[in-house]
Length: 135
Image (cartoon, rainbow, N blue to C red; front, side):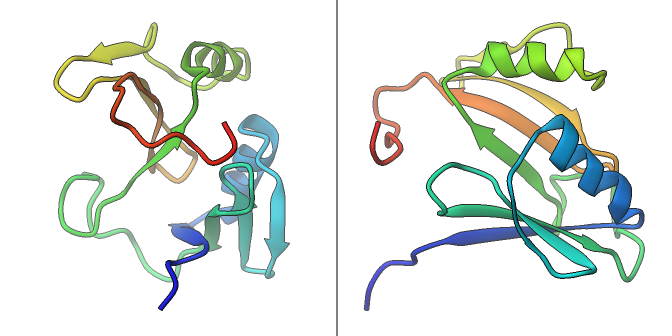
């Protein structure tokens, strides 16, 4: 059996159009496929990780991302500070600056998308983190 080749995370929004605009115009993710009620974006270069934003069919069970069924979607990049500045310039509500977490060995910040999902931009500052292929 071969390892998995790709990964897709699906998030559901009551107003998918607002979320689609956010992922296309604010985060500037490339659209990989438009399925009508669901759009799938390339979440990392190389065609291995994708994020699907779909029309919700029911209300979310909880706003807390750390309960069962909750989601925190993390974008990993070496350029955490540059992404913070980019998102701030686009009017996204953000903390004042990225923070370093000694407990996890990461520099990161959190923010919400239009559907209320918790998103994170993070850099692993640990020497034991797996580098992306080709870097």
